[in-house]
Length: 139
Image (cartoon, rainbow, N blue to C red; front, side):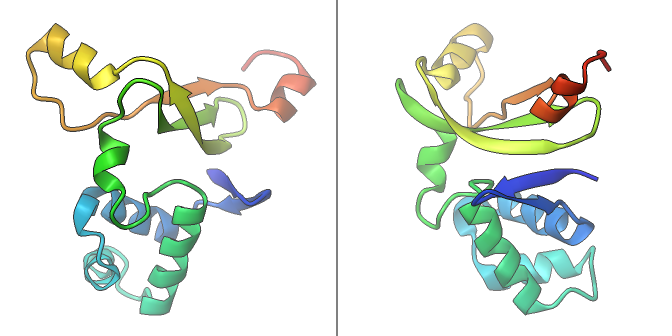
């Protein structure tokens, strides 16, 4: 089971939370809680609107989704901007999302190299979490 951290606490990424996260990320700038609720109900029919609201708040606080109105900025980082990255432990499956500084404009570099009109990107890291690294033995 994947976990994520928020305010120093670890939370399980339950199927309900993952469904809300997936819909919220797909919604982008149109992150309307009522719309997220309706979309999530298509895959998790018994989820309540209150659960969706609480999950959206938790995911925002954890930095997994942007605050309303900040989605465009989060998708198009410039030099010295902050982006959300994911780190995944290959041994225990722990997942951590963190906001880090980037020193180059990754979107422009990718666009230049590919000719694509870049609309966003995802950056993921894998390795051993501190607890697994302390135990030794590679995965």
